Length: 80
Image (cartoon, rainbow, N blue to C red; front, top):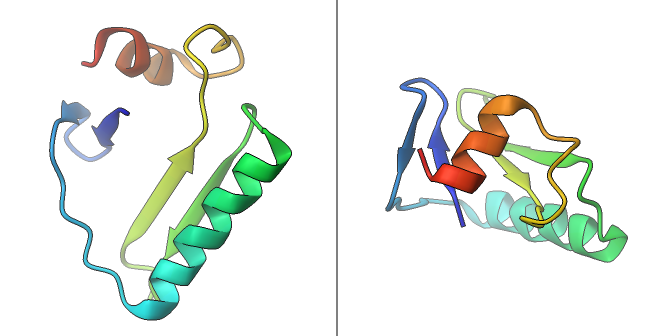
């Protein structure tokens, strides 16, 4: 697991997610879609109702990261 604070462009180790039931359902569905497709080349976005907050989820395999951008590779391989 890697967590990136996009705004600060830094890896973080610990987060708390406060989700409304509908947001939790969206996250669950997005993760299920990625897992069912075994899709390492795409990502999913989960937004709140006002589009002010967003979670982006990516399914990755450390042995297969060629399709990711350089920032993503760095956080996966170096956790920074």
